[in-house]
Length: 605
Image 1: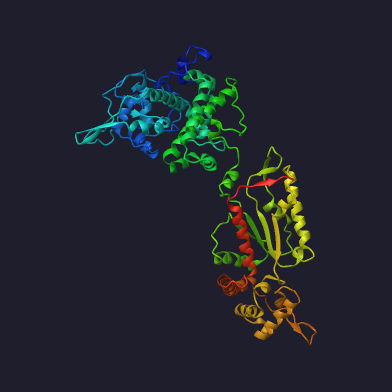
Image 2 (image 1 turned 60 degrees about the vertical axis):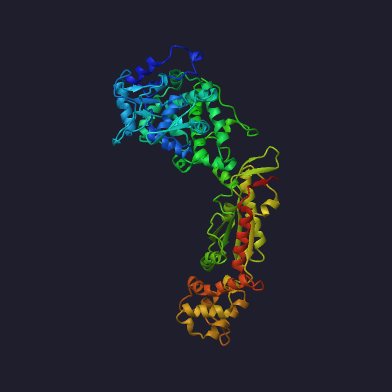
């Protein structure tokens, strides 16, 4: 670490004179040295007594001021620093590389540090006069001067059994707890947790903001300030200053991760997903889940410190994990063997649709969501997503390949399958039987789509079987020349047109029904009614276009009650046919449901 000014002098004078092999990993440095480090307590602010009690409760352990005093008395949980009214140490000048943003507790700590009015309680025997309980009557703003580090919360999961051995006496109308002498294991663990907390407190300003590899998360600081501090940080000098070797840092981190694995109430994909959540969202966790994240966070700081030392040639690189056996490093916050999409897929929570249902025109676009709701399906775009093709003349190949091409990550060592990053998506089309979906073109269109998917897989270095590919594409057409003819009778269509068109070209209802039947028999689209007219025997040709066209959107609106009634009839009467669009949506939903809660691989060719 090579910043200028008083900080550099303080650092140099505090370094031990021993070489690297002589670093003492078992006796912690004074907490007074730790708080002189730039940015100390800036990311996790100092915790007062009430703050620590509240944080412990969030982790499932009920503490009181008197219980904290007993834990201090038995040296199980010692406050890291005590701010006093008298000078106990050498005054310390704030370094110019220190963050200037701070909360009240940090401001008071810095003021006391600069005046030398701080004590290292770990280095002293039990001080019976230290106040843990507020005076009576309570003086607003009273503070006992005791400061805990956030990283001291890592001992919380070890306390319930020991606290259960407390004995209570009743005096002054209150219960007074008394804890027995801790056993040797807890004594050892208490010393270990304190040292770990001290090291993490000293290192957190450097590594905590960058625990998430995707962004820098700073608390009460500007990135420009942090960049100056980070450039000045000398990790090898810090290792000496803290008397903390790389080997010990790694050992400590792995023990924390082992314990996190032991207490974590969730497993496998849920645990991996929780570890992806940003730190701000941990406030929604409780009890053991939150404690497990505390342990992982502290461990990650120590491991980032170790990796930094490794990059500077002071330690061996961490081992590459094969994933075939369990290792504590698999519990790291930064260990993400799979993508977020894969983690969500394993839990059945992938936001990627299992089916993309492509519909051709405006009428289908208006009716589809209403049909979905009428069938009683939930609003779930992660199951089925509908898109509008925009007419049969639009080429569906690129759209279909984009929707349905699997995204692969790696091939299994057996060579039998490929791992995928998201669930498969089936591309379904329901369209008029014309253009690329005409009887003589639909097979060719399907093959063009499959060829594009094969090409997309080949670009990823993968190849799958034709059977697997066949599951990804389904093209279907209406059983009439257009959507309207497939779903409504000529009489229903005539009444709908008459309801929205002011003139109907002067035709009677019977003439309109006749014209609709004529173009239906010719396998033409309904729009030919108003674009070409009806057959005129005298002219021996259609009578010609109407003065203005029929709006298909408005027509779909007035036809909805008829379609809704047909769906209701099919839902109550097994002999009544389900309208084709309802059948398409029902099939899409059924496919999506089958694929919803499964994890997938792609069979290799």
